[in-house]
Image (tube, rainbow, N blue to C red):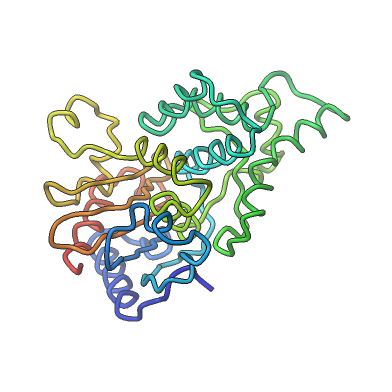
Amino acid sequence: MAFYNPDPAMGQCLADLVRALELDGRPGLSEQVSITWLRYPQSLVDAAAASDPQSHWSLPWTGASWRGDQLRYPASVVKLVYLVAAEAWRQQDLLRADPELNRALAAMVMHSSNNATAYVLDRLSGTTGGPELSGEAWALWCEQRQLVNRWLASLGWPELAGWNACQKTWDDGPYGRERQSYGPDNSNINRLSSDGVARLLHAVIASAVVSPPACARMRQLLERSLETAGRAADPENQVDGFIGEGLPAGARLWSKAGWMSRARHDAAYVEADGIAPTLLVVMSEGQACAADEGLLPELAARLNQLG
C-alpha cells in the first residue's frame, strides 16, 4: 500500500499527460518514464515535527503515479539517499560530523559533485577504492558496501522494495574494486523507483525521518534558487532542464536532479502562490530522454496548471 491515497482523477490526468507527450514527438515515452505526483492541503515543511512523526504516515495525502514502482538507474538522485543515510549515521553516533564531511555533503547535494559523493559513500560504508580484491578481503568489502541497503531495509517502507544504493557516481567510470563490485554482467548497479524517492523526499521535507534538526539541515542543502542571474552563472544549476524550469516565478523549490547520457531525473518539492504544495518525482531513461531538456519542465508546468 502506498504512503499516499491514490486519487483516480490525478491518475487519469497523469496518464493523459504522458500519452499526450508521447504523441507529441516522444515515441516510447510511456515506457521510458516513471512519475510520482503528490499534492498537499498545506505546507509539508516540518509537518511531522509539528505533530507525531509516526502517525504522520497515516494522514490522507493524495497522489498518483505512472510506473512508480519500476526500478530505474537513478544517476545523481541516489545522492539524496546518501544524504539521508549520513544524517541517520550521525544520529546513531556512527559517523562524526566533522567539517570535511559537511563540506562533502554540501558539494554532493548543492553541486552534485561525484568526487564528494565518493567520499561520503566511503565514510558511510568504511570502504575505499583501489585494486581488485579477492577472498576474505573481498567478501568483507562487499558486506560493508551493503550498509546503506541494510539501513534502507530497516525503514520497512514497501516503496523501497528492490532498491539498490551501494555504488558511487562517476564522471568517467569505476576502476579496480569499484568496477569489480558491479559484477561481470553489471547487475549490481544502483536502482531506485520514483515512488520510493517520493517517500524519502517527503520524509525529509516533513521532518518524518531521523530528526527535525537533521531534516532542516538537509532542506537547506536541497533548496534551489530560481533567480535567473544565478542560474545563468551556473550551467549545472539543477533547475534549467529540470522541474524547476517549469515553475512559476516566486516558487520555492527543494530538489535533487540526476542527469547522464541515458537518464534525466528530478525529485522536487514545490510551494508557490496559487497552487497546492506539490511533490513531483520524474525518472526518464534512454538517450532521447536524457537529451530532452524540455520534458521535465513541461511536465512540471502542465501538472501545476492542474493544481
